[in-house]
Structures are given as C-alpha cells and as structure tokens.
Length: 607
Image 1 (cartoon, rainbow, N blue to C red):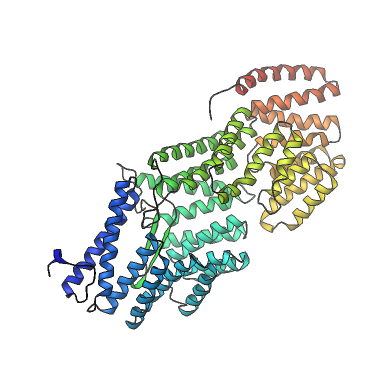
Image 2 (image 1 turned 60 degrees about the vertical axis):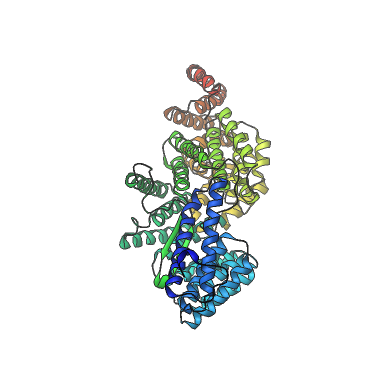
C-alpha cells in the first residue's frame, strides 16, 4: 500500500513502514498546527489550522486502532492524542476515554513514567468537571508516585494540588507551598515556588522576609545551574516577584535593589535579542515554557509573552521608582511608557473576536491587558492627585472608570479597593473630608490597603472609636510590618500626646506618621498629611514652625503647587503671631509661586 492510498477510517493491519509514516505525518501536521496557532488572526488562518489539527488527530487514531502496533507505541500515541483533544476540544469524555485506554496499554508495557504523565492529564481533565474529584485523584497520584522528582509530571501534579486546595483552604494550600522547599532544586521547582509566591501576594499571606530568602535561594540556583541564558523566564519572573514582594515591605532599600536587578535583566535580554524583530533568545512567542524531564516527561506552563513581560516590567519599575526615586516624574514616565507599549500591542489584536484556536491556549488576552491598563491609570491618577494636579488626576481616574467597565467581574473586584483609595486621596487633598471618609470606609478590613485607609480616617476624624480600631490593628499586624506599625503608632501619639511633646519630638513623630499615610509616594502625600495634622499641634508657633519646614521642603523639591497651598495656610499663623515682616516676605514668595501654579492648574495637555 503506497502512502497516497492510505485510509484512516478503519485500518486493521498496517505494515511497520506504513505505521511509521503515519506517525511521522501525524506529528508533522500537529507541529505545523502549533506553529500556525499563535498566528491565527483571520478566518482563513483558522480554517487552515483546524484542517491540520483534524488530520493529525485522525492519523493518531489510526495508529491506536492498528492491530499490529506495539502496545508501547499505542500508549504514547494515545497520550499525544489525549493532549491534543484536551487542549483543542470540549469533548472531555473522549479525553478520559483515550487516557483510560492509554494507561492500560502503558501499564502492560511497564511504562510507569508515562502512566504518571497520563494521570496528570487526567487530573487536569477532571478539573473541568469536578474540582473536588480532581483534588482527591491528585492526592492519590502523588501518594502513589511519591519521590519521582525527575519525572516533571510530578511537579505539575504538585501545582494542581496547590491550586485545587486553594478552593477550600488557604492554610492547607500554603502548607503545600511550604513543603516545596524540601523538593530537590530544579527549574520546575523554581516555577512552583514562583507560582506560590504570586498567590501569596494575591491573598496577602506569608512572611515577606522568608519569601525574599526563598527568592534569593532561587537566584543562587540559577547562577549555579547557568540556566538564565537557556530559560530566561525563570530569572525574569523571579526578578518581577522580588520587586512585588519588596513593594509590600516598609523599607525602600530592597525596592531600589530589586528594581535595579529587574532593569538590568530587561536590558540584557533586549541587548541579546534578534536585531531585526527584537525577539528575546529562548523565549517562546506565545509565552509557553516547555521543560523536558526524565524519560520523556515534560513540565509545560504558560505565563507571559515577551510583550506582556515588557509591559509588566515597565509597570513594576514605575511603581518602584515612585517609592525610591527622589521625584515622582521618573516613575510617572515609566508608567506612561507602559501605556505606550499597551497601545502598540493593540495593533496585534484581531478586529473581531475569534474562537479559541491554539494548542498553547493562545486566545484573547485582552482582559489581562485591560486590567494592567486600569492599574496604570490608577497609579498615574494617584501621582497627579498627590501633586495637586487635579485636572490630570481626574482625567486619568475617568479613563480608569471607563476602561474598568469592560473588565471581567473578578478583575474588577481586584481593583476596587485601589480605586476607592485613589478617589479618597483625591477628595482628601482637595479638602473634601466627608467624601474622602466615605471612600476610605469602603475598603474592607481584610484588604492590604486597609491600614493606610484607617490611618487616613484617624487623621480626618480622630474619634475614640477610630483610634481604638487603629490600636487594635497595630496589635494584630505581623512582625514584618514593624515599620508601618511604628508609623501608625505615631499617628496616635500626634492625636493624643501633642501637648506633651517638644517641637523636635513632634517633627520626628510627624515624619514617622507620614510614612503610614503616603503609601511610599515619596514626599508628595506627606504634604497632605502635614496639612491634615498641623491643627492638632499645641501652639500657633509650633504649627507655624512645622508648616515652615514643609514649605521649605516643597521649594527645594520644586513642588510649587504644594508650596503655594502650604504658604497660603502659613500666612494665617504668621498673622496670628504678629510677624508682619515675615508675612510680607511670604506674601511676595507665594504670589510669585501662584503665577506659576495658575499656569500649571490650567494645563490642558494630556498625561
């Protein structure tokens, strides 16, 4: 029988040569389909892709039905077929059926490693129908195949167990995450830990100091195994996670160090990239990471594409710069660069939505891009409100509100507290205290932003109930938040003990209190805190002194809008003190600053 006369409907007996040819052609069709998949942007591409896929599937079914085919070959063919069916069809019953048949064949052939890989895919299929059943089966497989670390399917099962356990019990899930420390060092282990850390950040659990130690251990392993060149994703994701973790801590030095490492790696990847298309070396275009383990096992995940990674890098570098850079401008420019990258990426999105069509699950990542865009607009709004650039701030905030309407419900919920915080700060810095309180109170007590919201509430309304809540929160905060705890304690001291404190003590206390309130936004929001707290000072002279310090700082930082606002308030205290000469000098300074401020406040150009 020649190759052109093959029938794939009901073959019963194939010669070894014919069978080998069919296997080869099946792999070729599926390989071509996987190459075409990320490029699917038109209906014609989609038809071409589906034809290749259907032919490859039909050929694999032919091999499995061949009576003369060795059982080991049938088992491997069944596994490949099940993978394709799982990725590209909704026929889960068919997937489970093929896997069941394949596992029997693999067990008869003594292929325990292949059985483990099939069990792993079986758990993934069960996740689609019953996550509880999937978790039970996953635990059973891990108990049965414990110690098979060199089979990368074992690591995939660990990842699935963690994800499934998150549905029911956070403590149990993060116990699993902790247990991964005992696994032998490997690239899959690094990805497991990175995934666990990302979830710990999502759920606001874990000890940041321990997390940074884990990340540093991963860095040492990368250097020892020299995998940064061959698998750059692990280093890039580690650097991004390190920045995220550092941003959650009170100390700004780790933020600066982490962002510097991320920027260095980003420059290195760009420098070594293909000059024509700027494609990073060893980085799959669709963001998939495919690692080969022992005896044909694999560890496959999809995290971020190169374009997504670059966008997130600029976003994280922008946030980091807002923390450690001397001015807000540098961080704001990085955030604006992130928006430019997102705009450029819009060109690659199909004009009309297409059905999901890729082996590697490349479908529509518009929701992810939209969520990132919303985050960037929120932070730019925060920066602008912090500098009293109200028009620009409101433009950014309005863009966020408009864009967020297109977000999926879960992504929209994730941004809710941050949007409340920005709206509250907008109201607070413009003197609308009642409106600010309304927004602050919408932030729930279990939210990571709650301490900042509560501290601001106490600044606006230092009632006994609010202060007692603040004290209770301080007592409940974990040790790694020691800096924030101390800063919040200073808020209490400022409210209750101001009459018993010396001027120098009060200034020091004010600096610490500001740290709790400005969320790392450098000097800008501390001006707002000064204006909010200064009336709590004992004497007019002390109030005037504190405003004088803030006024000089604003001038030295070229924060002319804040200098104008603070100067206007300081005039009243100088008048009360009868210091007419100083008042006249201040009037002249404020008038000159005011001319520049009115120009800035009237700006109509966009962010």
